[in-house]
Structures are given as C-alpha cells and as structure tokens.
Amino acid sequence: MTQPFRGEDPVVKQSSNEDERKKGGGMYMEQITMDEFAAEIKRGRIVVLPIGATEEHGPHLPLGTDTIQIESVVEGALKEKKFLVAPTVRYGICSSTRNFPGTLTISCELLERLVSELLLELERNAVKKIIMISGHAGADHMAAMRVAAKKFVRNSCIKVVVASIADLVLSSKENSVLSKFPAGDKHAGFIETSCMLYLNSDLVRKNKIPEKSIPQFPDPLIISDAEKYFPSGVMGDPTGSSADDGRAIIALAVKSFVKLIAWFEKQ
Image (cartoon, rainbow, N blue to C red; front, side, top):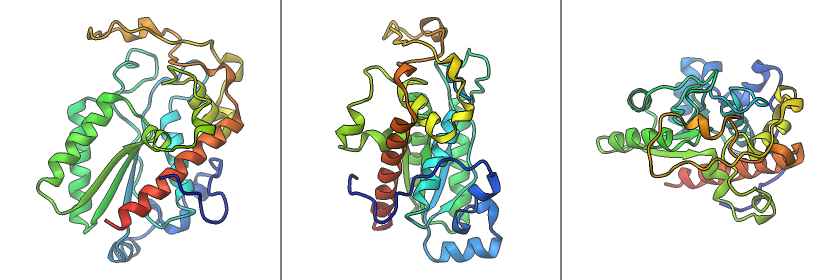
C-alpha cells in the first residue's frame, strides 16, 4: 500500500463550509436521493462507513479530533476513487479516557450491536462491499467493530473491511514520515496535534499545548482510573508538532486508504 498517488495530491484541509465539504462528487449518502443511491449501488460502489469518537484530546485539541481526522482522510480519498460515504458514527469506546471531561463513551455491546445493524441495513440495500474506517484506534473499540464484522460475514456474502487510521499510517514503508514519530506517541501527542494543526489550526489551543507525557500503566493489572497515569490527557509529546508534519501524516493515510480501496475493488 505504498505506491504514489496518480495526478494531483488529493489531500485537502477540512473545509469550513460543511455543505461544500460533503459534496464529494455526489458520493456522500446524506447529499443524494434514493434513486441516485440505488444507481451507484448498481454500479457496484463500495460503501465507506467512517467511525469517529467524542473523546478528550488533552487541553489543546477538540473532542472531535478522531472524527475530524477520519472524515478528512475519506474526503482526500474521494479525489482519487469513487465510493459512497455513509454518515459518520461520532461515538465509540473510550476506555482509558472515559473519566476525562467531555468524553462520551459507549459500551462494547452497543458498538457491536450498532455496527451489526448498520451492516445488515447496508446488506438489505444491496451493498456488496463495505469498509468501516475508524479515526479512533482504541483496542476495545476496534475489537468490538471486528467482532461485529466477523459475526456478520459468517451469514452473509457481503465483503467487509475493518481498519483504523493508525492501520493506514503504519502500513506504509515511508520512513521519512514514520521516523519522526516519537516513541510512545499514542494519543493527543505529536501525531494528532500535527494533524489538527494542518487540518484546522483554529481548533488547536496553541497556548495550552502540554509537555511530553508517556504514562507507565501497571500492566497487566486492569484498572478503572487510567487518567491518574496521564492527567494531561496526553500520551506522547505534542511539543514538536507542526502543520507540515500533519500534512505528511494525513497524506500518508489518504494514500494508504486509496490503495486499500483499489485492492478491495478487485476482491
């Protein structure tokens, strides 16, 4: 998944005009009619279901960081490939951050059920291929999505892909980008702060960027108060973040997503 893009760089900053952002060549489901949707499905379009989260990202990043990032990756990929985009799910499982202000987590059971029912609905609408792509990469969150997908495909001929934005970025071999990632950078650190500085710097509280925070959790002990180990809400080092690095990271994610879609089209 490392071939270069064809043509122009598809990465664009998030538009301040929501309607303009969602045009996407008529590929956003909430922007088209039932007849237009049916026609696209007859053409064999893949349906992409973005999944975000409403979760703390330190004192400097917005609660919708995961959602903003994944929607921007999908938007970038639409400049290279044709696919349908289902409305974004903006809630997920936030285990280690659940006790911070603003985090709205749902249960594993609810996410699994929600994913299952959305897959069934897409199947009922004659969709044949579905990609669930998450901007939140928490272990419990991704596990619930994968469990739901595995149960679904046992009784369906529909093909389903489940991946996170972290999967897209880390699948690349482009060391010029990956080599900049600080060790232990997992949440609201260098990577996510850089991405948000690129995508929408107005949403970054630049005067509140905290110091490096690499929590040492008492693994394998299961704890209910993870926030005690990273009170800033950060797992990583946001101090060296930059919009240029964010642009490179988002470009890497878009490139990998385009390659994933191209591969899936052939399956």
